[in-house]
Length: 173
Image (cartoon, rainbow, N blue to C red; front, side, top):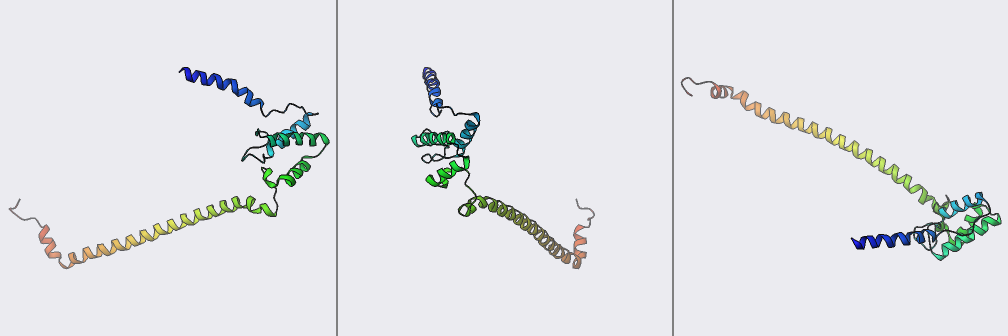
């Protein structure tokens, strides 16, 4: 129990330090620039990290990019100009939401194509299942009729023997 309490104490001591690691100390000149800055660093991916945006990454390159974005915003560049600059330097990988262009049509249209294909396959499978059930029911009905006719045919020719077998006999219990 003492180890658990010690672990939580250490955790609570380290937590505030980790939270301050990605905080930028330099304030921007206006609240509008700060809003744009926050939007940009959450929409741009760290080139070193696998799946983190610039805001969440602690790598040195993401700190440099955050500083560079801050400087470009202060210079008066638009969000599009900043994104174009970073795409020219790091490629489309830096964008979390790649632009719709010739090289990304498959990326944007594949989910729609797969969804439509899945829906069509679902309806085709359901349709075949229903047809299979109908054919199966019709086949069973025909088989049942054939078996019924087989069972009834001998009894009609030998109806006297069947009647004798089922007739009550006097004196027998």
